[in-house]
Image 1: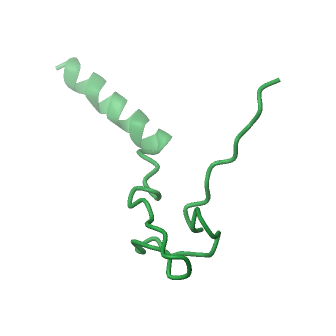
Image 2 (image 1 turned 45 degrees about the vertical axis):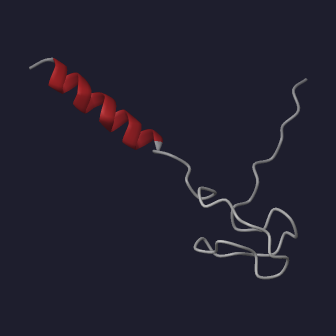
Length: 61
């Protein structure tokens, strides 16, 4: 049976687990550097589907 690993919470410091804002470059409590792309989840399923549909429409011209 596969084990599920939870995704890290981007609103918490990975080192001390204190809350951080999306704009923070580092943790105010422990000073850990925060990954600036931690909130980037990529395009949503709706955006990807819309992109595919528009690409197919362009191709049919």
